[in-house]
Image 1 (cartoon, helix red, strand yellow):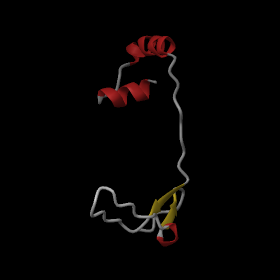
Image 2 (cartoon, one colour):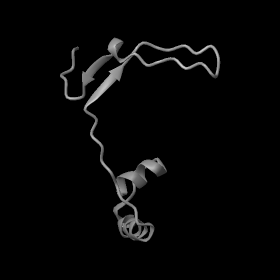
Image 3 (tube, rainbow, N blue to C red):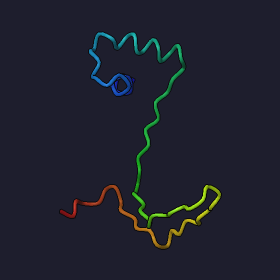
Length: 73
């Protein structure tokens, strides 16, 4: 919660506020979920010419890069 509060405030929080952050977490019944992405998906851009136009997504034209792939550079 300290990391989340720091990101929300835009600056690192001092350790002195840890008890206050913990009390707020308990009071507001908050949880932290950690999601680990497994890949990035890229597909050709779609251009809409009207607000009601629905363009189907064509995954067979997309590319996938795993997140744990080595840097190609």
